[in-house]
Length: 235
Image (cartoon, rainbow, N blue to C red; front, side):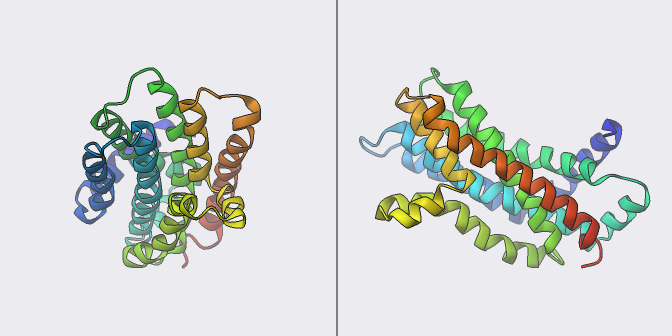
């Protein structure tokens, strides 16, 4: 990868995104929930953090990444970049950095709004960072499937609901639903958060969730590469 091209793509993409106020609804919403939850009775702060982080990872990466990539397609920027020998990995890395910036800022603000102890601060942020990256890469794939920004928003919605599923499934205690949910990166993140909170962070406890997150990372990269070459510009 050529980092001077990544830097240029990052700067250009960030400037374009800052002009699109609609996507910031997804960025602000988890923070608003954190303020709301901060005053909730005796609910453990760690649990509230996991819920707010789940909202962040379900909405921000898919919505932002999908919009960014779809906007590039809509303006025929992707075609121009391909003709100028810009690799798929360079575009993906630059756009992922933009989305990750907002995910990290959201997670940091949520952590401090909820006033969690600093004991496990680095662990919580590291896990949410890696899980967020997996969802961001999948969001890039969704963006390539969309024809324009409007269709990107519509296409992103089912996936946002899917990634939020662990929040609802835990209420019903259905074995099949829990088994399916365990295959989601957001569910894996919450499982690791639970182990951190309970001080049961062992290989046997977090092994499967870690495999799930890594699998989503690998599969999302493969899907993006495939879509970039096959349908990314000609949809």
